[in-house]
View: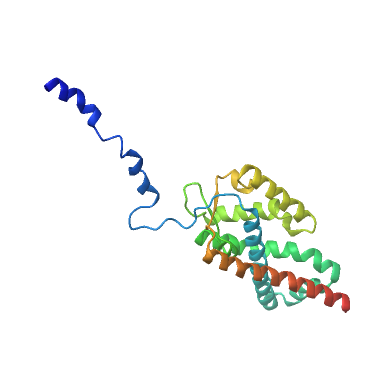
Length: 224
């Protein structure tokens, strides 16, 4: 009897069976909701619209600040600079680069403080380091400089279309944008749902409003 019992013991041992079930709680710890930024798939269009909203909103904020402080300390130069936007061809050529350059510092500071920005929050985009922590201010500034040059072509007409297309192709092919690959930055997205869809509608309205303002301004200049 002793030999039979000893030989049967390994067959009755239930330890290996529950092993698959013990790994399940790691993805959803008890009492804690799953992290909202879980979608790491390449989504260039969400990133494009997020960037467009940031460039428009923060670019306008930059223009307001330049006009306000410039009017106090260098009114003549400020008036001459702002007057360039009223010129038909010159205004169109400088509008993009000026918006990109003025928006970049605001986006960098916002990313260092929160890991995102207004546009990124609306379209559910978040940028973090490889360890999951937020970028430092220096890292955010360097990243924004790379995006401005290699991703947006400094907003220059036609050139920006080429650089944005190249960035889209690289993102879809390698699953990481060139300006994130070297430093190992990770871009994650808020999963789609009612809340995220609502935010994207708001962001889309901001983007459409900016496009509409550009069309109205163009027609008004032609009529004048």
